[in-house]
Length: 107
Image 1 (cartoon, one colour):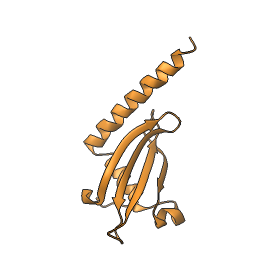
Image 2 (cartoon, rainbow, N blue to C red):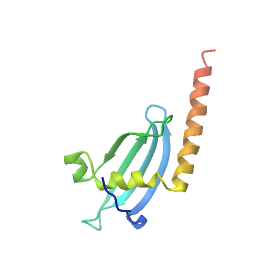
Image 3 (tube, one colour):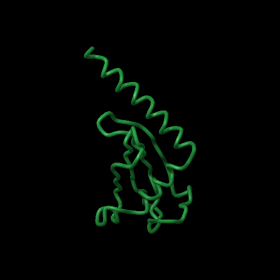
Image 4 (tube, helix red, strand yellow):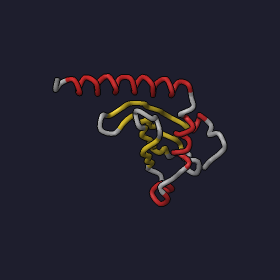
């Protein structure tokens, strides 16, 4: 586990959205520490009820070989950011409303 804070300048783009089949997805383009011209696509999936990480992935070499990397830890650190938390809650509310709507179709 990485205990140091990652500079936000390493994070080039973030997105928070949901898919009904997976959950709430937080994705980001995070700059490589070793190659300044390379950006890695990283994502984590949260369970919509518990908001715990259920899946993660990154296109870097470290993740390919070890199934873990500092890019994922950086994304997990973003979960503490108030703006990201608000986006997660908004996506969660939208997803739950759609789920309720779908459940009512059979009634």
